[in-house]
Length: 237
Image (cartoon, rainbow, N blue to C red; front, side, top):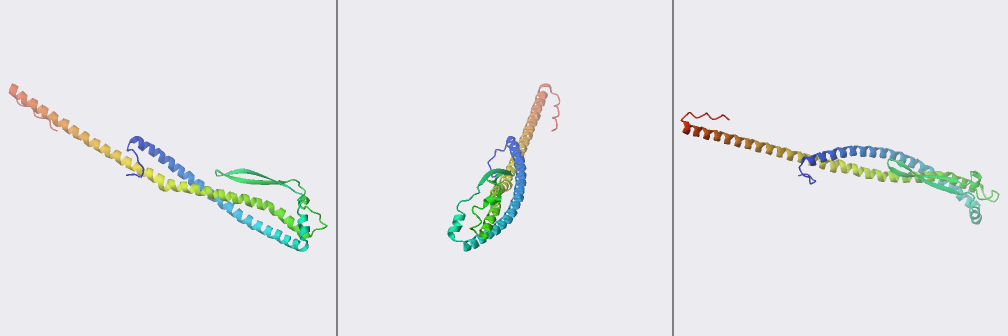
């Protein structure tokens, strides 16, 4: 018996064959999607690795400059210098479709295009290390934003790859074998019914032929009794 309950009819056989063709075609499309997702995922992972190293190096330089600046300047002066920033940033988010996965795209723009606006203090009362720290933080900000976008993309792609892999495995190891088994079962049942019908027809034909022979024999015997003639030879089977 197949794993799924089916009626052994020709209509059910036709329906299952149609579903099997659709499942095989869907299985191929899902495998192609999974392979392309894996390719996209590996590209994103490589970019993520390079960006993470770049961001970590930039942050280390910025933190190093801040450490030196805090050693050269008083804590009150350092806090006062960074208390009121002059530059502001606007962050926009949109979505990009990658193999039916909507991944985020982050974009930002500053209020002013003047690079000097990044320094919210005067240069007379601060050290050059603080300038380097602020400049490093400003330059690494775009890389940090891109890193956040890439990491979120890799997370969404990984989830989609896992879902696609489950669907591929379900079709390949469960659904398609079940339908093939059901089709084989229905085909065997229909062949068995056809053979049984053929045997019944042959038996009915033999019974009709025997009955015809008996009727002709009885007719010949009645003719002999009535007319005294020779009986007609019975037909050969």
